[in-house]
Image (cartoon, rainbow, N blue to C red):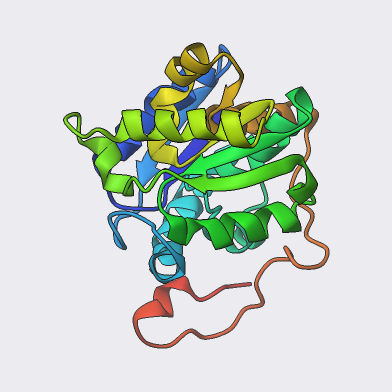
Length: 245
């Protein structure tokens, strides 16, 4: 089984970290195809970045689908471009935010999300409401760590994230923590051991869900909002993205 994991930003170091987490979670017989967008922002921090990240994501998903991927993981916690990707691809597409929320809800009555910057909180909160899981999330917290700080081994990012988890345990009293950034994927085991509760990484969660859907033979419904895009002309720089029959 080939599972495609796409980092919608252009930072290769983050993709390498994501690949390790995906391969660790994958079952025997699963091959991980991990890549990043060829063009777009180096990190996704808010709606403006997200808007410019979607075309690069779509290009990678289209190529991976042609290569026979059994499913696709959108490795951005904001679930950037998820609806567009599902309209494009026949095989399942799962965002790491959605995957982490659902996994947390299966092992804990309540959870707190610890993300990077405060500007990410509205998008994450809106996604929780859309997925019907707002009532299970006690709070979405920001550690005020910029995404690219997570790629700097000399940054105090890990300690700041850990301190925010400690505050969450004291103030929110959640039963689990969800890490709110793909760049945190390598921290789940460390932070779980340190704080004594489940800490969920969305990359591993999403890979596991893709594998399950593929084994069940389930594909994305093409009735309604995720129906294939209607053929039409796209002009200018986006001409190459025009849907065809």
